[in-house]
Length: 499
Ligand code: LFR
Image 1 (cartoon, rainbow, N blue to C red):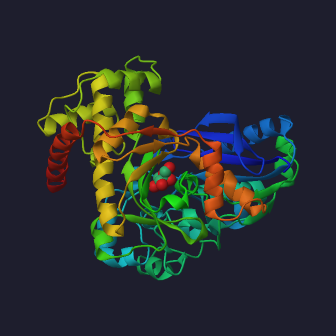
Image 2: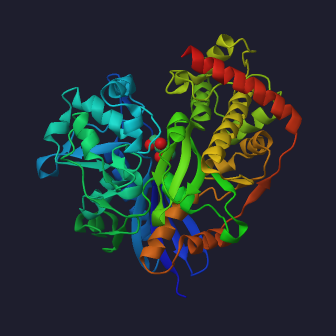
């Protein structure tokens, strides 16, 4: 069939990209038209997202698409990280500077919320892992601080905001709504009774739409600015993890015994399920249920991911290094193995001024050799991540009754062959890495389906398999890793007790 082109806009916490995906009925090929740095802006001891700058970059990217001579441009859709939001007031004026989830205003809000509503009850009407970054805790903090909430007429999550910029429509897309901890996974509507009990306003929450729903066509001003024709704006699974898991390259005939790790700034480690799991055991394991496409759910844990390496790289840069991620990882591959471990979930890694110092302090505090070199610090972090994933997958297997025979690593972190190897070693099962552009693939394939070009999630995944190069990593050194895992577990449990 005739080639159709779709535009996927994907923003992560470190970088954003505008890609064109050409779909010929069997395969998708991606062309990157624009890439830009994202990241938070520190101002007066707060941390914010410069969403206007991102919007400018998105339009620059769309302008490059328009100039690229792509025929049959069908639609455009945006996905980003979850939990953050923009407030609009009367006349759609933006209110305040959007907060970054790593801002410290939410510190301590979990205990405060728990003193007002038992966490068991919060979990049963939200299904989410308790993390103070979640929108619920941000809104709790905002509602206690004279923030703009009362003047707000509309709350848009970050991808909703860009869809509004593109189309003028103000809607909240379901998959991202499931990251807010304000949506009830049983009714699939906002948990208004919970918000009322916590005295958090809910009048500004928008109608929830489904991935694949159309938001209308590009606004005339955007067409003028970018040179694009008034193509459709179609919501993909706007939560980046939701899009990434759409693009896990599995074949249903292989059965259900697979897990995924969506690997980026965060590592989202879990399985796909048919229904949310809201049991006491799920609460005790502090696991999350996130909504996917076609009624699928993701039972997963949100684990600190390559953020650790991103911030180590920033530490090295302050000390004069210009090394790339590849060079840093090559260094780690040469460093001695299984020497010291960190608990990736320790709160000291959330946003330390210097990650190298934070890693060293953790090792000192837990009586382990302190990594002296860049290479040994990176190795320590990557090995610890792999062992953390192992623990998480054990709990998730237990909770879901699912045996895990293979782990799919999707997303940009799949480029890190050393980490992929460590995951296979730590977990003792094969790892299949790829596609690294899972998020954009998932984004555009849901748009393709909205245009009537594809049917089921299985058909979408078949296209992903046709379109990706996958690399397999097999378990080795199992004894050494099992021994190290015991040490790691002891460090993590001692650490939990003391904090
Ligand atoms: C991954 C992600 C996670 C979410 C975190 C913060 O990019 O979307 O799923 O918990 O970012 O929003």
